[in-house]
Image (tube, rainbow, N blue to C red; front, top):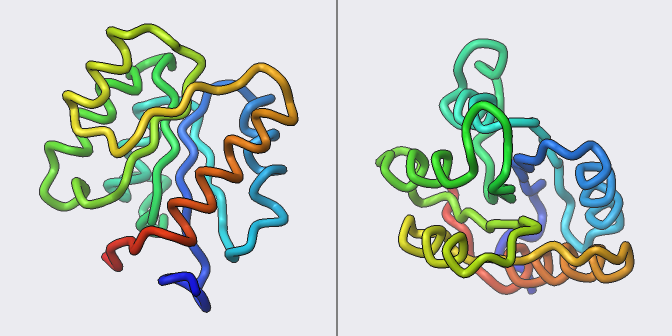
Length: 147
């Protein structure tokens, strides 16, 4: 039984590719756990969402962040460093979901305390399976903090 059964899970997707946002939403649509995906297209908006600044003042605290690395305005590494350096945010699990297979990106993400690193598959079915595997682990197996 899921540690979060019965309540909606809030997911922040930080992704600048509209196609990948759509694929991720599709993969989570038939989820075993009720969820709400909030998508922002860059790192600046991600931090505003997480800190509930400006137009994000009423944003929910996410239970999980899915974070791309290569984004405009503020990179995923910069967002990760800010999140894990902030006492109010550091407990939120951050899953790197990116196309980068570069060892330097993997190492840097873990050095900045990423909770895991997943390389996006290029094939739609594999991408969908990867997102569902993230869902299965992070939303059904792991116990997440409740703010």
